[in-house]
Image (cartoon, rainbow, N blue to C red; front, side):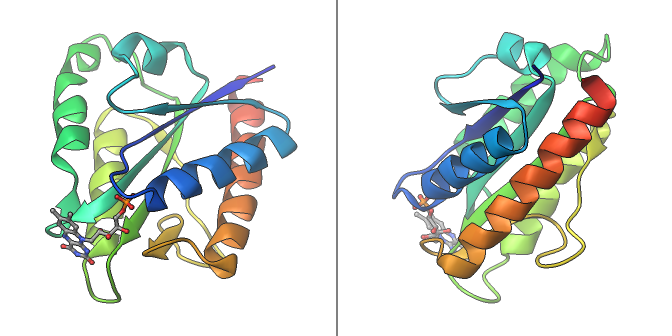
Length: 160
Ligand SMILES: Cc1cc2nc3c(=O)[nH]c(=O)nc-3n(C[C@H](O)[C@H](O)[C@H](O)COP(=O)(O)O)c2cc1C
């Protein structure tokens, strides 16, 4: 069975709730889901996963520093193209409308594109991936559900 690694940082629990909702949806979509904080995961785990979802709160219009540090460390995988062709996606919790959550999403997606990964967008809903204002509400949880299922389908198509 294809595996999806969901790596997130969360201080207050909002992004963690999105990660958990996405994991349920990925499993419902027919892939194994592994959820890890960015502090607990490793570059090796990224290489081994068939698909990768990255989540962060929006901090000062960008991703949290610990996630940025992890992505900077992933330069070790860049030279040999170890993430190339791997399906990826992103999710973010931000403080408010206009708080630059989309910039944080783009930051997560851009790093994946630079690694040569294949990024899943979202046609109906937040186009860059699930974006919550604070704690994920029913609408965001439904979006996590459809995004996670769609992502699992992509992973199975490309890696199954
Ligand atoms: C250091 C810091 C910087 C933040 N910067 C922003 C910001 O630029 N824009 C915004 O909308 N919210 C900002 N927030 C609010 C968080 O993005 C928001 O509370 C989020 O839901 C926290 O997610 P978490 O519960 O997973 O930690 C900031 C919070 C902190 C602690």
